[in-house]
Every structure is written in C-alpha cells, then in structure tokens.
Image 1 (cartoon, each protein chain N blue to C red):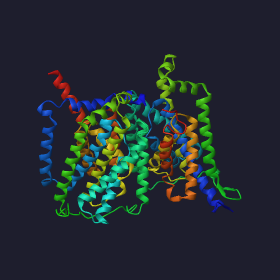
Image 2: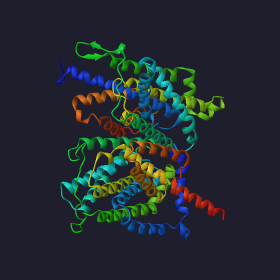
Image 3: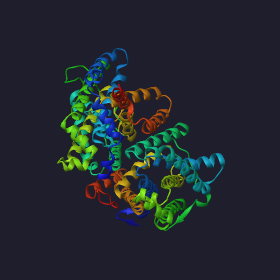
Image 4: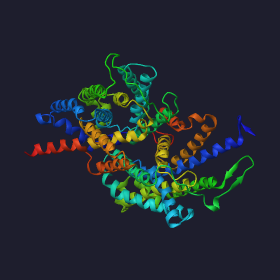
Length: 335
Length: 294
C-alpha cells in the first residue's frame, strides 16, 4: 500500500500539475479556450456530418470521465467499458421497450452506471495499483458476460432501431442536428462537472491521496471514501456518455461493453494527456477520427492503436496537451 | 452410474475439462507471477504471447514441416527470445517509472500482436492436428479419456514442478528470489541483476508460449485465443495473489476445477464463476488467498 503510493510521484503527477500551473496568462486561460471551443462546436455541425462530431463528443466525455479517475485520483481502471456499454443498454431499453422520453432514458442509464460503479468501486478499492486495474478489468468482463446472457440486451444481436424519443416529451429529436445539440449540451454539463470536481476541495484531496495516500489518511481524510466517490462519479459520467451515444446511433451492442473499449478510453486519455482538462477531449477526437479513417482496412486500426500506445508510454508520456503545457511552461520560464 | 443426479461420465468429463483449463491457468499465472516478482509489472501481453506461441507451432509445421514435439521446445525458445528483446528494449527504459506504465505498455503490445495476427490470419482460426503418438485414448470404464488431454495435464504438472524446482531449489533460483527481496543488495554482490530480469521475463513468456503450443491441438489456433483467457487468468491472480509460485500454480488448478464443477451444476454461471470467486475473496480476504497481508 504505502510503497505504490509513494512511488506514484513521477510522471502521473507531473502531467497533473502542468495544467494547474499554466493557468494564469490569458492565452493559457482555460475559460478562453472553453469559449473558443464552444463556438467551434456550435458551428461545426453545419460543415461536417453532425453524427460524426456527436460521436467524438460522446467519446470525449467518456475519456474525460475516465481521466477524472486516472489523472486526478491516480486510479487506473481497465473496466470503464462496463459503465459506458451497460448504461447504453439500459437507456436503449428505456427508450425502446418502456417508451420513456429522451432525458429520462439518459438519466436512468446514468443512474444505473453510478450504481454499478458503486458496487465495482467497493470491491476494487480494496486493492491498489496494478491489482486495481486487474480487478476492474475482471469485473467489467463479468458485466460483459452478463450482457451476453441477459434477455433484455438482445445478446449477440444487441439492440437496433432504438427510437429517438422527444426530449421532455416536447422537443423533437428525430433530426441529426437536434440530437447533436442535445449531445453538445450533455457534453458541456459533463465536462463542467469534471472541471468542478477537479477544482474543488474534493479534487485537492483526491490529488493528495494520489501523491501520498498514507499521509492523506494521517491528516484525517478517509481515503477509501474519497476514492469510492471519485469512482462512482467517473462511472456515472461514463454512463452518461454511453446513454447519450444511444440517442446518436440508435443502437446498443456488445462492442461497447467489451474490454477493447476499456482499452480505447485508456488510450484516449494517455494520448491526449493524463491529468489535463483538455487532453481526453483531444485524445478522443484523434482516436475516433483515426478509427473512422481506418475502419475499412481490417485490423489495421487495432495495430495502429497498439503502436500509439507503445509510442506514448515510451516517448510521449505527457500526452499531446500535457506536452504543450510543459513546453509552454518551460518557454515562459526562460523568457 | 450417477453422481448427485448427474451421469458419471458427464460429471467426470466436465471435471476433466476443468482440470485442463486449470492446467492452462496454472502455467499462465505461474509466468505472470514470475514476471511480477522481479519486474513488478503485470504482463498484459501474456495472453497475446500465449497466442503467438500457438501460432509459432502452427507456422513451424506449415512452412518448415517441424512437428509437434520439436515445436513444444522450439516455440517457447523463440517466443522467449522475443520476450527478452521486448524486456531489453521496451520495458527496461520505463522500469523506474510508475508500474502502471508497464501495464499500459504491455497492453499496447498485446493489441499490436493481436492486430497483426488478425490482419494476416483472420479470426476464424487454424487447426493444428494432434500428433500421431498422442491420438486415441483410454477407456477408464466410467469415462473415455483422450490421450492428448491426459498429456496436457501431465505436461503442465511437469512444467510447473520444474519451474518450482528451478526457483526454490537451485542456485539461480535462490539468486532470483534474493533479487525479488532486494535487487540493489544482490547487485552489490556482483550479480548482473538486469540480465537476471531479462532472463526472468524470457522464462515467463516462454511458459506462456509453452501453454500456447499445448493448447494448439485442443482449441483452434486463433488470434483471439489470448485475450479470452488472459482476463480470467488476471482474476485468478487476484484470487491467489502474485506473491508465491506455489500459490499461482495451486489457484490455477483449483479454479479450473471449480469452473468445471460449475459447468456441471449451473452451466449458465460457468463464464463468470471465477469473477464471482474473485469478488468474494476481495470481500473476505483482500490480500488474496496466498498473498501476504498488506
């Protein structure tokens, strides 16, 4: 316990601090970039196929949720596909079989993911570091097998043709454009929750646990409770992303609960920059676009993902956003 | 003849399958435990290298005409050498970082290997014939025991025993155990610890390849065979703890048998039973059955 926590001071925390310290000047102000990003996202579906951008946003939220756990609490979960995929099934079931409205379907899906996160979290936080990763992986594989065998998921076939029910029963959601703006709204809410969580006393405690768990405990913080809360929050947001994805693609399938999906979200966070606010969003965009381009050529996408993984871990541990932040900081330090 | 309302041949047949799965679990988790001991990383590529081991045997037969028995030695050597290259050039540079990076790197390697073999051979899999000397079987009166399946169990027990002997009873093994306890001190005595680490990784990976060759005639040689088994092995490792060689072997066989029993009495749960056991162990004894208390 103590050994892993003490050693965890290297690169993981480096990336986390890079973001916090480069906030002062205007050009590095997160709010400015958020505004530019928002305007960009409001306009872009008029130029690009909105479903594609909506997909990017769903995965970006998923990656941001995952990064909340790895980047700020130092917990590597290899089972986040369980929340993403299972909430998709639940939302699909609510919309298709129960006839609930869009916002209720998404809410129920998110709540289910939070509950699942609570159960998995209670088990997983009993072990640290590498074991934590293996436990989350094994538990999510259990969810995967459950999804194959449960009746309501449609087993190997999954769910297709899930209706896009109107939002609040009033606002029509049948066009791609209206769904896109729903996704954008959900994305903004989700990322704002992550931002608030990280930049709050709660986030500070999480970081202190990541840096030195025994010391945080000795200062009176109940580390397990904070870790569990972070896990549930992360699971709920991952579920929110999965539920919203159902509105976009109108299907839920085993792909979303498979362990490969858990690996993908890890890659998005690592590529973009662990422990940065914008990193997961950048990483998710790149991976989704990459997959889209490479989808036609068999397993090339898997090979490229594996290669990017190895490259990032060996030579590019800060990730894209983390690296930019680091360069920016050292450049400012010199001038 | 019935046993608890289940025909005895069916019961014994499932138990045998459980024991065979247990043999694979034991050899794979043994390799994981060896690697974890010295490198402190969980080798996510273990399943992929198990798959590569099976493929090397298949390719040796297909292109060079080298049969099962030489492949049983050659494939682990080839894959083990490949593993040593991985350790030397990919894992060593990140050895001093947080160990989660090792997990991430080997996960990337697993994706790479699986993707490459899937690209070349598809997902349908290739068949590998049982060698002539191990065809047929014994009639035990209450059930039919295929010779090859019996051989798999015997081979796994021999390899596990040999590895245990190497680690616990030889001078090299003693040095390795010492390096696990305190690498710096062992280094101060003039032992080339980095070389020892490379050899250990090669040995662990070679064990995975050996399991792959053993599995080739039973299951089809399939690019996805590794990822299917490795997650179960991870759960087994959480149950048994990565601390001891004997623990890894024992929990591998035990959980294979337990899975077989589940298939007899409640087949719907056979896929998830090991994960359920893991959850129970985490609640009752978080450090694992054979692990040292944290």
